[in-house]
Amino acid sequence: MIDQTMNEFRKKLDILALSLSLQENINHFGLNKDYQLLFSTYIQMIREDQDNFFIEKERKENIMESLKRTKDFYDFEKKEQV
Image (cartoon, rainbow, N blue to C red):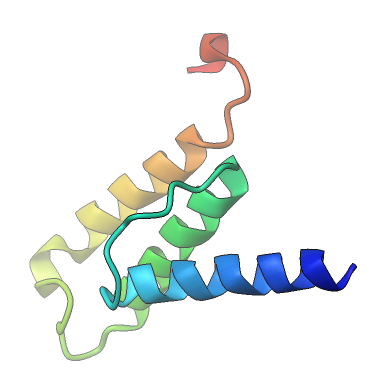
């Protein structure tokens, strides 16, 4: 139980570091939910960016929509759903 909790914590820490560009993408996440969390984090960061630090204001909506579509793609379980 403790090992599983530590693994989940480590995975979330890796996702946070990756989303903040603090580490390279050396870990390949095994589950679609990991990617969904990563893309959700990106969307939230862009949405809350008031100073246009991450993305220019004109491009925000398009990029968030693209990230949402990518996140939705990882919801599919079978290639026929695409």
